[in-house]
Image (cartoon, rainbow, N blue to C red; front, side):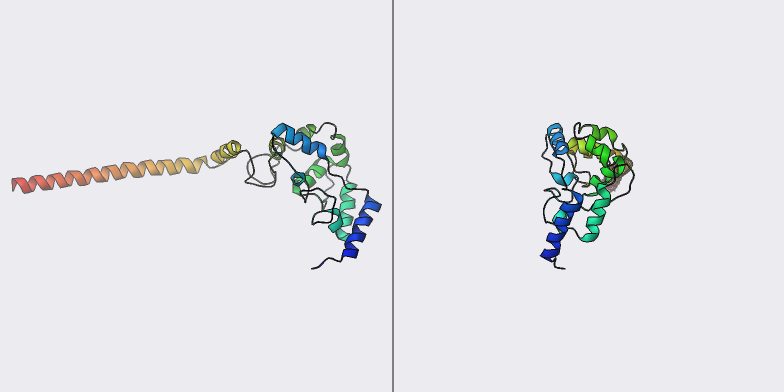
Length: 200
């Protein structure tokens, strides 16, 4: 469906007039990049990698009137557990706002390291075995299952699949043991047959 540029422009102006500007918060991005040594863009928390400002999908200028209303509710979620879904934030960004509330989140701009202490410790949005807190600290994406520190992903997957790995190793060892004895049996049978032919 084509977007009417007049409506898109009006929506963007309405967002600025009634909702204030939608800021990305580079303090968190800068902290994660310094701590992890990885380049982190706005897509860790936002729908768009360039942040909320603009007219691309996931940015302010592309929102419908219904999404603008949802954005307004999300901006007003100053207390935790408001169960809002901002259309300019991805699932991790919304998880932050719903867990902490906008007020506490904005206060943490001075000390972005505190975000890791305030988020739920057992939350793992992409179900890769690495908590969202650890992904935040290591600069990996909390919504992409394959994005993680390789050694940490290896350890998590090893622990998760240890039972199957042990069964496969046991089956392999038993299979090799059985094959060895089968070949040994064939060898003995062949020798006996050769001895019978020589003595006969």
